[in-house]
Length: 365
Image (cartoon, rainbow, N blue to C red; front, side, top):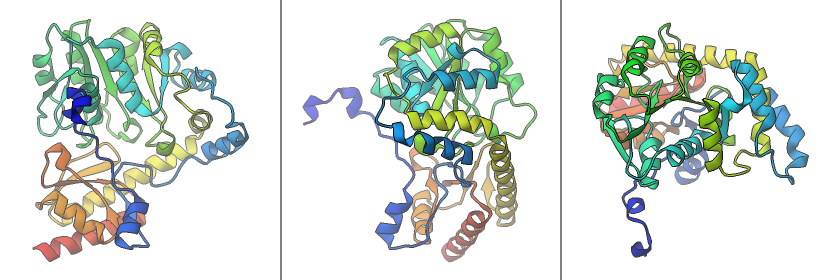
């Protein structure tokens, strides 16, 4: 049936998601499995969000508010902006698709980095748009290299900050210099899915750029720090004019009523966010100490995951850890053949990961 399929779809490699817990239990006959592969919140969802969803259950026979009026109003107060500065999406992935469909003509191109969030390239290919990728420099976005790829046909630039899967970031100084020389006709999209975990002083305030320039868009999500990944709720912040055009490309009722209610409540749950951040930072410090004692090379991360060079084939490491009920992410799809990425888990999960990692590396030495 290939003759029925568009050529750009045939050439697209689909996104490979982290292995589910239930599938692992079923396939391997395991009773106790932990998943440290998809950068989810190990502490569960916001309790306030759960309660808000329960109150909405009896109304799921009705379509949700297509405009997300109350969630946008809440976000506007949260960021000191206006409701028309926000577009809601079924996860950030949908918003990436909306951005490309809204702004990039068939003969225009998109620029991003190599070894970054795979959906930029996948969604560009699905939409039959050309994407150019600059190499990382020391596992970090090289904004100078990105600028060299920008030409008269460049319309979008995606910058994941912090970057997934490396956990590295570009600084305020680097972003300021970059924006000062970038042509005004290029839309820069800062993808900040992991911003609530950042613990450095020179991380850029993207909204300050957005308030001064119209060619800035910022993506954020409720999936990570708020623990609502299963609801698929993300949003874009941009100039109201840009948002109005994106709304034309958005499907109606794209964000369900439970997700909207949970998002509104989660923004009020500052204590949950504080505990999540504290737990992740403490867990990251523990893992870094243990990995250093083991003599392993890993990247300094400002996100809720760590990229580790195990010195072994990543698929072999993934399969070996899976047998012990620990799901990590192999980096084969990113071209990092000896690397695995591990999400910061609970204390017990982190300790179990270290125990299993030590056991496997000892057996393979």
